[in-house]
Figure (cartoon, rainbow, N blue to C red):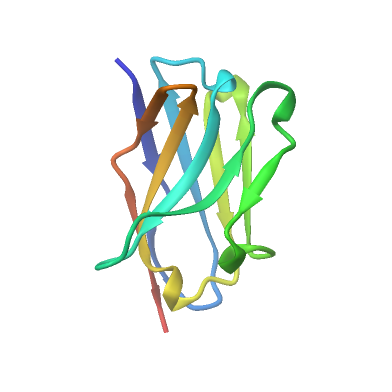
Length: 118
């Protein structure tokens, strides 16, 4: 059974930092592209950041709104992907979801709430 378990969310003041973690089980996550998505109330889920697999682990993609503030990384030995979020803004408030994708296989975590107060 595949599980992606996120942690690290919480309440933080604007300008603060959080680090999200997502640990995978039931898959060899190193084979998967891993990503973070977020969904704010009343809005569609959107890609925040993604990191490649295998030889593409240095390939990262970021939403324009988080470039320069967020950093995605992975530790394949721990089957874990991270999202370091700095200079947080109230508009970053959302449920953040971990995603693992390999071809037609697409797995999601249950989400972790991030709330940024002004």
